[in-house]
Length: 411
Image (cartoon, rainbow, N blue to C red; front, side, top):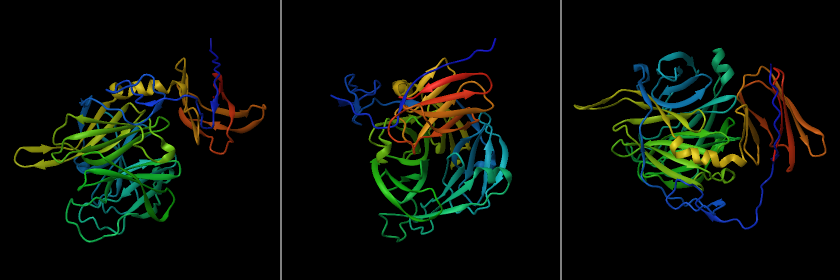
């Protein structure tokens, strides 16, 4: 007998203000956790911690300079940071190359890749040779064009807003190198690799092709070199990969931050050492905010060190699960059939369906009973835009044509 599911909740598209809020550390894993705190003041402190990969697999020799990583569909996509201009689709367990995709672009120093629903973005912004590149750019490539073999890259050219001296600095001696960025809403956010200060600075620029000045947002002392960034959509989680002077890899966890301020360091900040000595970790991606993939490029230091390129899988549940569970007011999980988040919503509402669907229609209904937005969904994890809705309370009704029906109200 086929089941029908009916679920109800509310989502509120506005900032909610509460009386008598208490600022403090809201993370129960922190040394200074305050159970009475209702507002995270970003001052959580943590005991030292380390993590080992769940498994590792050697990558093919073609990827000995793997430098960026994303999850897209059933595969991981990576690239090299030399003159190779292909993207490579990898098996998530074996690291075997399944497909190669020409990008139609040149590669001076590709250091990172990120994505949104329709495009991949490749950062040709490596700048560690002398710190004086004047042709920093990001390639914007349609996913549809890439898969069809008709990739036509658009170019986002940029310069750093606070770089005024372009004198050659020498190898690995600049604070204007970059190997990490993410896409969010209509912007790209870069995390610099600062060889001198061992900090990282965040810069913002538009996702559209053109010539721009990347605007400095904030800086933070990570005491290391940042090489990759993974953003877990809808969960306010960014995990940075990096390594120390002695090639000791680490992960830098940023979560529960105020994204509206473009300052990802306003929330929790936790550094986790990775037990892979002499691994030059480069690319990082996540499936769900808890499970992560990381790649390292080949590192040779004769006569004793010869680390091949590898793919590693990590589970950060021990560090992030309490925070994920704290989002219960923002993410509702009903009978493991549907999840909807965040709450309050801003520009998007994320719909995660746990049962396969062919076609799903939705209606957004205001408190007067009027349908103010409607459309179709056809992926197991997808989004509904809410940026054009006025502040207020709405009902979201999802109707699954395969026979699973549920009503969703947002708070």
